[in-house]
Length: 63
Image (cartoon, rainbow, N blue to C red; front, top):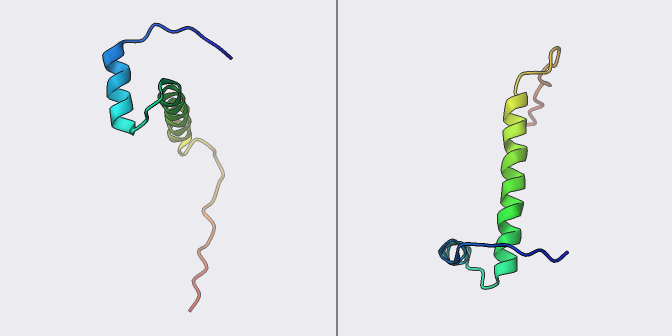
């Protein structure tokens, strides 16, 4: 999908330097992927301890 964006040149340059990416499209994709991962982590953190009745399984130690 083609999309036109108005991006700050200095912001793109900083992102490209930070990631070692030489293509603008690639750096945008990396940024979007990281944003999605961050949102998923935050959702998991919010769920911590919210499901009642769960028990921790016993650890099986071999040896």
